[in-house]
Length: 187
Image (tube, rainbow, N blue to C red; front, side, top):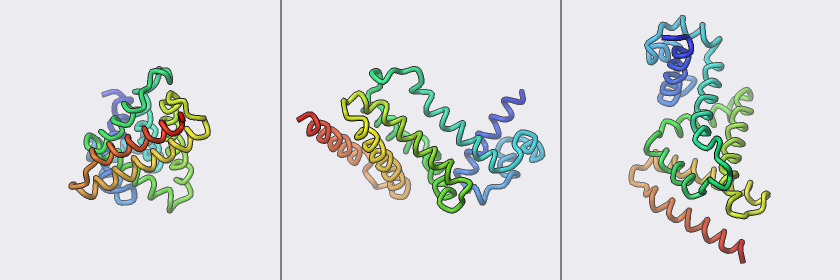
């Protein structure tokens, strides 16, 4: 296994362990065990747990943004983006667990605050691009992206705590609200 593969294996393992146990409860030993690598080797690739945390975040962000790379704004369908985000709740709930873990760290620790601010900014920007196709003013596009990001995070949280929460119906209503807003803006 190449050094690059081992590093990626550690990042993937850290993602799982941090999402499952939380950053503060996860140990380098836990991550090494999950990766099938000796704990000493973790320090060869990452000087500390914090560096590993930021590497995991960078990797996750790159994976989710790569699906939109190279696409022109005119090729991005806002509804497709909404459905893809909705699907993450069921397909990859660890993605949201990860986000909530980072939010918690950012609220309690200044070193993580800027990282969380960047995550939220990147999320708003990635939503703003497809929204530009809807002929909404730039200032409103950014505000709408912020509202949608808050909705996505909040709806995912509710679904993760309540299996009975009807995510499909809720997203249908969210889409209806968005469509009504857009119709009103055209008039």
